[in-house]
Image (cartoon, rainbow, N blue to C red):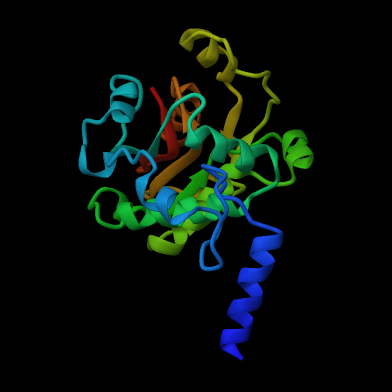
Length: 232
């Protein structure tokens, strides 16, 4: 019976192939979302092994953080951009959970990140959330939580203002666009906790910085940052 199911699965895959969300190659019956080649050979940063990595340096002098991390390098037109487009705009929220698990396995090896108590995704405004149907950063957070001994809090950090797109803005303009956009709804829940703030892609870091400023107003809170990709 198992052989028959495997044969039928291979036959269905031949007629209606599932495609890798990164390279668009046909997936084999035992592959899910990512082909084996992409699963192991996408451009990992290994920032969990480099405390003074490029993401961390973006926040020097701006935020007091324990550590900063991105899973992959983001290159325009590359496989990561293909995957992130599927994730954010084509309803494939399962990608976030998978990438969270991959990142979580790396971060569980780090004494900085495996000490996180709470994982908080950068929030979407409620209007954008209704349009998209899910918060991509929350999907990533849920995958991370499966590999780290931490809980996910999706509604404590709130986006009060629906901001305009950050595309083509300078770093200063991006930060100005994000000022006073976020607030912490229940600071007592986070007092004394190590918070891992997560987002999908970090470019200038303005959104994460604005979130971090609000979170660090909570007494005794320590902050780390993790993203799926880093755009150089």
